Image (cartoon, rainbow, N blue to C red; front, side, top):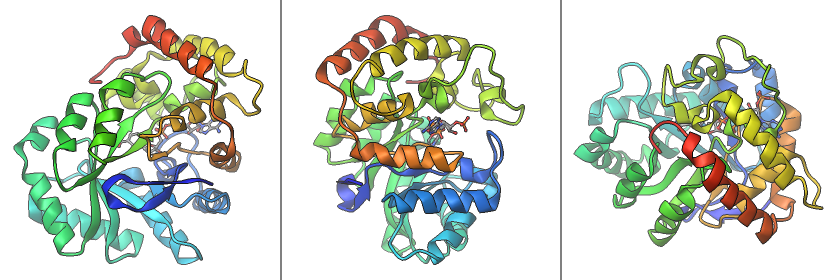
Length: 327
Ligand SMILES: NC(=O)c1ccc[n+]([C@@H]2O[C@H](COP(=O)([O-])OP(=O)(O)OC[C@H]3O[C@@H](n4cnc5c(N)ncnc54)[C@H](OP(=O)(O)O)[C@@H]3O)[C@@H](O)[C@H]2O)c1
C-alpha cells in the first residue's frame, strides 16, 4: 500500500482509505457489527491506515465500531470524522466542542486525528466563526487537524483560503471531472490535502447493475435517488440512476479495454488515484471482497494516457450535462 501526505497535516496516510458510512448500517444491506469489524480488519491487513467516518453514520455506530476496532490493533489508524449534521448541531464553539467530545468518547480517544465540517451550508462557512472554533478546539488539544467536506468547487475554493483547513473532502470520480481543472491544482498549490469521496458513484462505477435493479427502501440510493433528503450529488454522483447505468456501460468498455488486470470498480478507483493532488480515495465497502479489492488498487498500474483522454472527452460530451445539484 502506497502512502501520500495529507496536505498541511504532514501526516502520511494510505492512498486507499476506507469509507465508513456503510459501517453505520444505515444503507444497503445493513452490516452486522461483526461484519463491520471484519471489513476494518481486512482493510488494515491490506495496508489501509485511513478511515473516514462521521458522527451521524448510524447515529454514532460507525464511530463506536471504529473505536472498538482500534483497541485491538497493533498499527496506527488515522481516523477522520465529521460533525455538522447531527440533531442539535449549531455553528457555536460550545456545540462544536460538545459534539467533538462525543466523537472522542465513541472513538475512545482524547484527541480527534481530524475533524471535518460535514457539508454545512455555504453561508455558515462564509460567516467564518466555524474556522475560529476549529482553531480553538485545535489549541485545546481536542482535535489534531481540521478539514471541510464540501459540495461544490465554489465552497472548496473558499475553504482553501482558511489557515486552519488542512484538507478538503470532495466528490470526485469519472462522472465528476470538473474538479480536475477547477479545484485539484488550486488545492495542490495551497498544500491542502484532498479525500475523494463517492469514488464509485455509490456503486454505479462498478458496472454491476442493470436498469431493473432496485434498492431497499431504507437505502439512500432509493430514498435520495433524486436528492429528496440531502444533496443529490451524494447519491450516484448526481446522475439519474437509469442514465448512470447506461453511462457506466459505456465507461466500462473504455476502462476494461486495457490489458491491465482488475475489475471495473478497481479501474475506476485507479482513475481517481492517477491524480496526484488526491491524497486518498475513500471508497465505502459493504463486503470483505470489496474491502480487499479496493485496497489492492494501490498496487495496480495507472490507466494509460489514451484512456484518460478518452474518458475526459466522454465526460465533456456525454456526462457533464446530466449531473444534478451544486457542483
Ligand atoms: N458528505 C460527506 O462528507 C460524504 C458523503 C458521502 C460519502 N462520504 C464518505 O465517502 C465514502 C465513500 O462514498 P460512498 O460509500 O457514498 O460511495 P462509493 O464509495 O462511491 O460507493 C460505495 C458502494 O460501492 C459498491 N462497491 C464498493 N467497492 C466495490 C467493489 N470493489 N466492487 C463492486 N462494488 C463496490 C458498494 O455497493 P453495494 O453496497 O451495493 O455493494 C458500496 O457500498 C463513504 O463511506 C463516506 O465515508 C462522505
